[in-house]
Image 1 (spheres, one colour):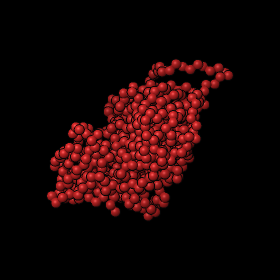
Image 2 (cartoon, rainbow, N blue to C red):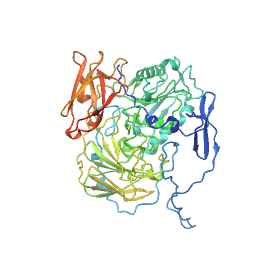
Image 3 (cartoon, rainbow, N blue to C red):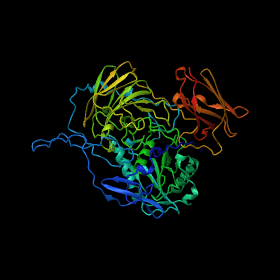
Image 4 (cartoon, rainbow, N blue to C red):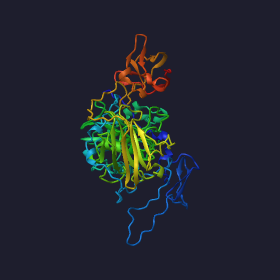
Length: 608
């Protein structure tokens, strides 16, 4: 069975050094001798222990903190404060986080503003923007999520497959080694849901010994420096399933997570990956097919790694630009989603809406151009109240509004990162680019991480002919006014269309070693018509190009080679796009396989 593939890998390691992702802990690995990190009143120093660099036991430090806000009056015996006062830092840190949960119970205070009648926004069908991307990577940015993904509402069964090797031997039980990660995944997605989540974990009592040393499987390459070979990893996973199939009952398993001992070094298994597989690509067992497979990497794996990667198994896409795996960009949602970056790991309202884990009345869907006022609770808050507002512009595009506070897993948010988030959604944009874009106010300057993008009281933004203004703000969330100032509004429920499967790399990039990217021959312009000639290897049937910013991909540009092995592709650039620069990627293909990504260059279009 041919198994094309693309690795949806945790790319936040590119955005932040790996050592910065995990909180310092005595004995945990660190990256630079002499480096210092302070956490929870202790100062930790990176020291050399044997051949490894580890954090020492830490020493207590005394710090002085200056409250940012004036202290609240001390309540008398007959007076109770409406809610606890929590000192919040002004600036959100981006280099150190801890995986912890701050209480997020609903508060007693309520806004004073007059809120629009909720019944006006109860028809949410128009706001279920349909997936518009022609390329299916097993994930989605709109409705509906591809079949085969883990459904949190169906009591999903998650099978842990623990394996060790003669050169990496387990010293504890799989339950002991995995309990922290299991808790992280369960707690995170259960806290994100209003509806009840029941994840069924199946963990064998002991590790299964693989027949060869880990070194022999040759899976130690690292995805982000392009030394990782997905074909070898696919073969390794195939051998894992073959080894354990007799002993594990895979009946109704929604996802399998292959783990190895925590001592597994990065040099021998360097990439944590997840493959949300399309029909025909699944791993086959005696009891049935497994369509979602996660595999751990080396010794720097954190709770965040598992939570992010499990999001792909649920069908969620990355919310940042990951087109160039060695130079990824945080544009899109900045810090504001676990599928974007690790600084603010709560899920966005839109992702919760997509996953179906909110009650219907927690989404307000704008179906009229009349002015309206909405009370939006923080996404992390435990509440049955409204979590977000959607303005559907077309069947594939819209605007989402949500509230963020230092609650739940948004535990490290500073004052600058608390407030109302407004972002656009365009489901036609395919992975590996972001379909989501935050809309910053004029005063915002942080275009790298978008930490100062949330709106404060009396601030507003206008996008696509819609103006959103924050009228009131507090620990209860935000009150926003939505006004139409010349924008469009979709009035019919969109119809979900079958999603095409790419003729190339889908979920497990099964590119053959000799199916290489095309060689550039020439290119030329005739007005706004661009022609590129590519030379492909003998094994290839043809080539295609991708200009994602123009929504051009395999379906539009797939072209067979001529007798000389050349491929000539012509495209017309829209007149209004001339004068701009676009990233262009070239691939060769053979049947359902395509060459590895990416040969690319910046395409400078002529001025109109």
